[in-house]
Amino acid sequence: MHIIDITQPLLSCEVYPGDTAPSSKRVKTIERDGYNLTDITICVHNGTHIDAPLHFIAGGAGADGLDLSAFYGGCTVAQFSGEIGAAELAPVLADCAERLLLKGGVLTLAAAELLAESRVRLVGVETQSVGTDGDMAAVHKTLLAAGIIPLEGLRLGEAETGNGKYTLAAFPLNLAGADGSPVRAVLVERK
Image (cartoon, rainbow, N blue to C red; front, top):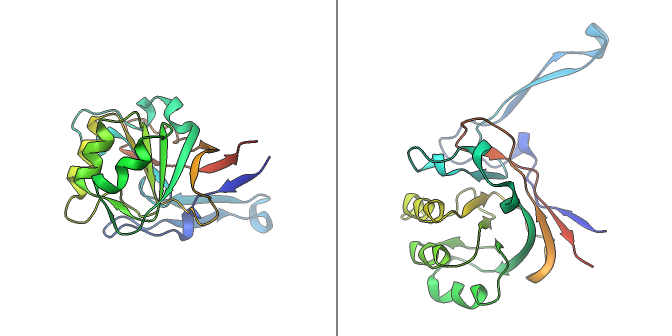
């Protein structure tokens, strides 16, 4: 079995402008206390993470209320650059798994609207946010309202493009009422 880790290191990850940067502090040490113990401070949107509907939809599900089957299964990895419009995305959606990982590129609102009509349940991007600067909130709202979970901050450099080559595993933490969650995302190569 070949596993590709597509997760950013959490404590040294990219941080979306305005989000709290992750930090850690060793509060117990083997030398002083007989064991090590570390506290961490993070934003639930640091590093590689998912957005729950509650992030943009009042009364939406939190990270603990999501259907875990969306985070595990066959996926399609597709290569793009720049803004991804509906015309660029349509050929990929014609033969796409329920989980779509975008290697390069960011979604426009038109692409998000097309995704909302598809069978995709999760869409992953390498950037810290799934949408373009001008359409960020609208892209999120469109995806989340359609039941599509954004998976953001991926590292897909080692992943090959294509459909059915990998199984994705990217489970959120069980954070009651949280609007997002860090994940450990991996691709397992299918034999």
